[in-house]
Length: 253
Image (tube, rainbow, N blue to C red; front, side, top):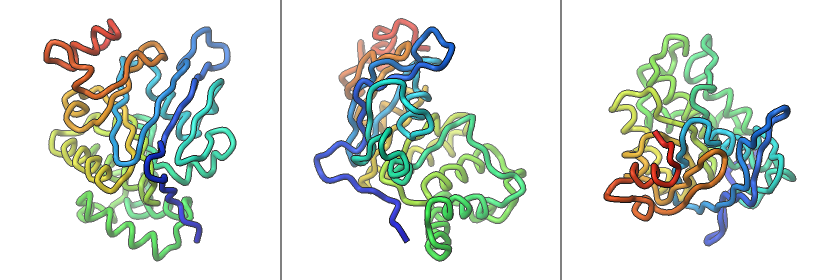
């Protein structure tokens, strides 16, 4: 079996973008323009910005779900343009609001299906499923049909499905949206745990309290462009991260 996880050599960026841009057909505006940044193993990067700022489009380009109009990028040393299959082997992707489960399948069946898609042998997939079921406390609904799940159950199943192949990089779009307090905290605890394992995490969020608490660095997008980047402390103004971002973008809500 081909290993799917693609570790990054120490000191090298695991996610990078250089002048990355996306313009959709028949659109007069760039969804993302001249985006450049780097992320490193064992770090958490928060992607912030108002609705329509380009967060999801950026993550979709990095996951190879969208082809960039201009610029370049790489994940674990693999070019988005030249080696998209290798990029997909290296990432775990979750897109809130667009991700879905097969409702007639159980949680276990949904997750194991993606294990096979990512090249895991049945025995390895089962072992990994047991590990993730314990991590996300899925035992009570692991063999129930997904159509009966609550929002929190679905989200835990979606995250387990995204990381079943133990990827080196996690790209998470609003991973805690719509979840209750307890489930949100478990998701953030999981993200911190992945950091300790040396993974690279890039996630979008409107939850400024959470990103300030767990992120090492922030990327602030405004109208498709990078308005600022730095640590939460560096972007804080007048004692508030929200104030700092409002001053940078003039429209963050």
